[in-house]
Length: 256
Image (cartoon, rainbow, N blue to C red; front, side, top):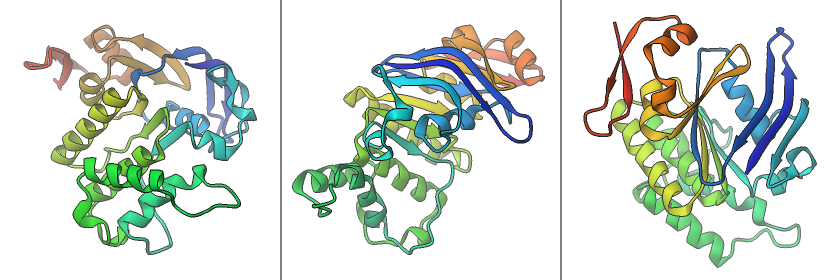
C-alpha cells in the first residue's frame, strides 16, 4: 500500500501542493486528472524521487521513501514520462537494457539470464522486435513511447507511474499502448498511477480517479462518481454532456 500523510511542497512561483491523506492499494489502477498547473505531474515527480525537498511522508509498505536509496527505489517504482530525450545515440535495445541497472551490483555490472529474459519479454509484448537495433532518435513518437513502456516493464517494479505519456500520440497509438499497459498490469497485479489530460481515457482505463486543482485533491472516487456534468464544470469551467460508453458502460464527456 502507498500512504501519503501531510504532504506539502512549494515551488518558487508560489504554487503549493498540499495532500493531507491519500492511500492507494496494491494492484490498483488509479488515474489523476485536473486542469493545467493543478499539481498532477508534481505529485508524480515526488513519488518517483525526482523531487525530494518536501515535508510530510510518503510510505510504501510502511517504508518512508525519503529513507530509501534511489537505487532501491528504482526497484519499486518505474516511470513512463511524457517525453524522454538522450544525448547518446542508443538503439532501442540499449535503452531498454538500462532498466536493469537497479539490479546490478558494484562488483557485477554484467547482464545475466534473468535480465535478458525480462528484456526480451518486454520487447515482445510491446511489439518492438523489429526495432531492436534501430536508433532511438530515428523512431516515431509512438515508437519511442513503446520503448519507454518496455523499459518500465523490464524494470519489473511493483508500481508504475505514467506521466501524461499519451499527450503527443494519435488515437491509434494511444489505444494500443493503453491496452498493453492494462493487460500487463492486470496479469502481473501491478499498481498503476496515471496522469491524464484526457478525461475520457481516465474513465476508460481506471476504476478510481483523483481530481486535482490548485495543488489539492478535490475529488476521489469511481468514474461514475467523478465524471458528472456538475463536477466537470466546477473543476474545468466548461459545459459538457456526459454519456455512457456504448461498450464499456463508463462515463464519457462530449463538449457542448
